[in-house]
Length: 115
Image (cartoon, rainbow, N blue to C red; front, side, top):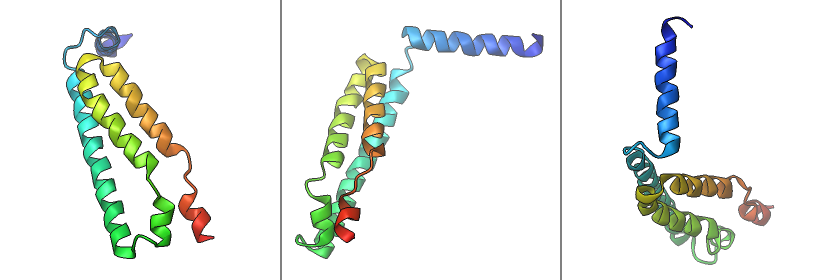
């Protein structure tokens, strides 16, 4: 196995400890990631509202954005996941993955209105 064997064993041990929940520091980075994503979600909300106010409430953009379900549900999931990361970090990660999947699904509102 050579000289890299101890390094591999350390990585495997760290992963096993992380999966067992014995790592007391894993909740911090998960909560911090959620905080960063929450601020990005808030910035998206501010940007979309600023653009809508610039173009008017009856504009094509305002109609396309509509009630902005994806933006609102993402913010809600981040708000739930941050305190959840302290208790069950893996559930918070599951919420982050769920938000990513929500945004990966194509949203054709703007495309549909512009064509």
